[in-house]
Amino acid sequence: MNELIAYLLLGVATNIDNLIIGTTYGLKRHRIDFINNVMIGSFNGAATFISVLVGDFLRQFLTAQVGELLGGMVFLTLGFLTIAETYMMDEQLDEEAGEKPHSSAAKSHLVRVSRREALGLGLGLSVTNIAGGVGAGLAGFEVVRMTVLMFIFSILPISLGQWVGQHTAAKFPQRWANITAATVLVGFGVWKLVGGVMS
Image: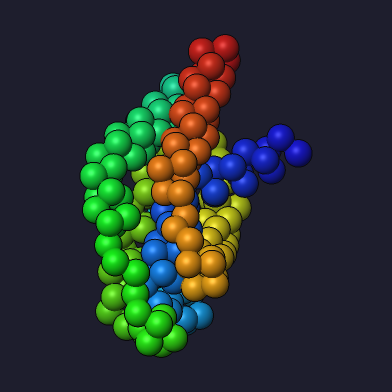
């Protein structure tokens, strides 16, 4: 049970950006259709698969203790970078808050996101999964489970975010989403560092 919770928390923490992107596109009345969403999820899944294999390969040349420590350091770094990103985007969020609302005519029309734009989203969103995947491989997470979870946790948050943006006209609290993700990642890092020291 603890292992399952660890996988689920890691999947959520490394895909918070997908929820924020989905909400933002929903607010703009831009629709990421099912095919594009699956394509984005496939990029995330592929990035996770390759990066976990890389981490697992590197782990073979290290002791279990060093693998745990390195994995923990990767998660800690991701967490602190997420916190830094949160504070750096404050000014941007303030500017967005001052934007005028869309007209009713604009709100009634959904614009379909192009394949090229979805491709760019998939590549951009997979960056976090690459770093997290290497850390997961070093920490001993299983590659198939991680790949499947990252694929699922890429698709669902985008769909949920779009629904929230389109139906509630409410912006997802990006600051708190990032802080939550950072807390989980830092927690994973501390957990793995303690595990490495104790082993």
